[in-house]
Length: 407
Image (cartoon, rainbow, N blue to C red; front, side):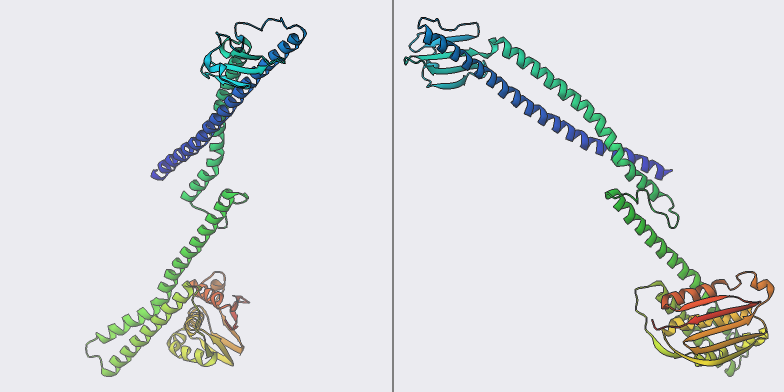
């Protein structure tokens, strides 16, 4: 329940952040648009006013050339003065020929020009009284604010939609990470070719590696506990013998020796499973005589073979290069399984780099996997050492075939 509340809070927080970022971008974009349009409107307005003054100038000069008594143009927004006119503002009379804008607040535009006879004229246009310019400016500003408002509203809706589109795959990834991911399944968006797809594939690979690591740890615990039962049982029985009253020195020595061998076996088992758990560690290999190694192990398992009434035979020979720690655990598991679950006899055939084991089993045994963790440990060791393993039931007999190759 707490995880679901935390995920819901994360959803809202992430959505708000994305929306805020997009809205900030939209507001800045709208502000930039407003600024650009305002500058364009102002520039266009100045151009219109200057063009109007030029037209008035051309029109007056054309008429003046035909009739020198033509009166100067005059209107509510346009005044024309000759040089020396007492009504001409001092600031304007000081200007040379050209276009000017005075008193930007009032919007006074000035055009200074010379007549063909050398006389100078001053055209003064008051922008605020120029009805066409005022109407043009008002309409442009209204259109500008309307477009800015529409852009803001559309930008808000677009920001919300984009925020949902962006946050959806991320939130789905977060939701899947909180749940259980089945084996051989990728996270949402793994097939996408963008950053979300890359993140999904990386997370999928990470989860798979963590899952394999966890499975390896579980297998290490399971297999170690399975293998250590035998040496621990030997130690427990030997200690019980040592505690018996009147235990002879010979029995005491034999019990101590059994405890020593059990401790050595425990150490070998632990080292072997540490090697299985670390695939990066280099395996230390030696030349091993399989025939000699198997005979020494069968001497240890002779009491079990006698109690089960199983006769064992070894034929042929094989010399291989293998890590002793892993090889000992592999052979011990094969022999223990064969003696515990087999019947009548155990046949071992060695040739070159090959080991074959065959022992009859009962019908009840052959119908189920009665070999427990032993065969699973053998499979893992063969995978770690790149050995070829094949096993199965053939006519009420269990067969194991291992092809050893140098690691």
